[in-house]
Length: 510
Image (tube, rainbow, N blue to C red; front, side, top):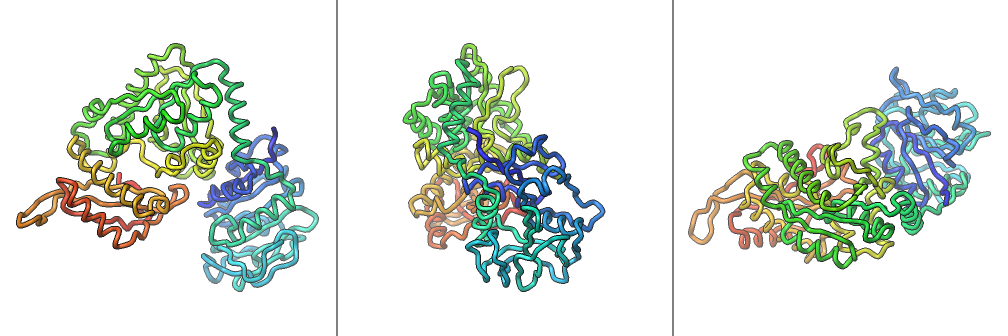
C-alpha cells in the first residue's frame, strides 16, 4: 500500500526531528532530507515543510534551497527560518529584531482561515529567533500576530504556501499539533493512514519478499530496538531467525538470565552466550573511555562472529538501527552529527563477516518503535525499559574495570532501579543509572572509620536523548535510596545525586 508522504527539508534546526515526530503522531509518514540534498523525485511527496535553522537569512552564508519544483506546485509550510527565507527573498523584509524573540508568546490576533481552525487568540506559541519579518513577501496575507511579533504567520495568496515564525513542533506551542493537522490533513489533503498496525503488516510482507528462505542472525541486547526488530523478523521468517544474546559481564544484576527468560516467552530462537570473563580480560588495565569502548566492541565482534559461524549458510545480519541514526549520518550542515556514533549498534562489523544487512526499524523513531512493539502484543515492561549503553556498566565505572567494581555497581544499580519501580517513579524517568566514582571517602559505620567508594545516581527526562534534564526526584526517595545503598552494598559509604542537564553535560559520564 502506498502512503502519502511529507518531505521535511532540514536547515540544521535542533527541532527538525521534532517536526518529523509530530507529523508521525498524526499517522502521516514523514522523511527528513538536507535542504541541499533533496530527494530526486519530489513528486513522491504530498506536502513539504521547511525547518528552522541557526543561520540568519541576512547572512552572506544563508542557506538557499532550490524550491523551483516545490513552491506553487505543492502545499508548503515554512517554519521560522523557512518563513524568513520566503519573506526576505520574495519581496518582503527581514531585519534584526530589537528584542531577542525566544520562549513563550501568545497569539494576539488570528485571521479566520482553515490554517488556524480551532486555534484562538491567546494560544501559547514558542518563539526562537533573533531576526524578525518586518514586511510580508509579495502576495503575502497576514494570518496571526503576537504582542511582540507582528508577522507571526502569513500565507501567499495564489499558492498553497503558509509560513510561521514560531515552532509548532515543540510542546510549548499548545496548539502546534492542531496547526500541523490543519495544514497537512485539511489543506494539503494528506491521508493519515500510517499506523503501527499498517507498519507491521507491510514490513513483514517486505521482509518475506526480501529474505525468502535465507537465514538471518541478530545480536539481541535486551533493549527495545533489538527486541522489536527480532519480533518483526520472527513474524516474517520464523525459525530462520537466529538470535544471539551475549553476556559481556557488564549488564545489570541478573539481567542475562532475566532477559533470556523474557525472550523465551516471546517464542524467539535465542542463544545466550556468557562471555563475561573474555570481556573482563579485554578490559584489564584500561581506564580511557574510548579504549574501553573499542575493547568491548572488538570483543563483541569476535564472540558474535564465532557464534554466527556456527549457523550454517547464514546470509543476513539484522540490526536495530532506528531513524535518528540514519538522519545523523546525513546532517544538513555537516556539523558534529554528520558522523554516526562510534557505539552505534554492533559497532561496524568487519568486511570478513560478508553478511548483508537488514534493518527493519530504520524508518522509525524510538517512540514509534515502542508503539509498533505494543501493536504486536509485546510485554509493556520490556517496551518501557530505559535505554542502556552498549558498553554497559564499563562506562559507568570511571577508571579501570575489575570484577569487584562491577559487582559493587550492579548491586548499587539494582537498589536504585528497583527503588524507582517500587516508588512508581520508573516510568516518569527516561533513563536512570548509577556511576561508580574513582574516589574513596571517609565515613563512619558504627564506631569504626571507613574509607570506601562514592557512587553517583543519575536520572534524566528526555524524549530522544539529544537533550535531557535531570529529574527532580523526591528528597524522601533519595534519602531512602542512599540509606539502602550504604547499608546493603559492601564497599560504598557515600551517595551523591547528579543535577547536570544535557547540554552541557552528557547523560553518561564517559
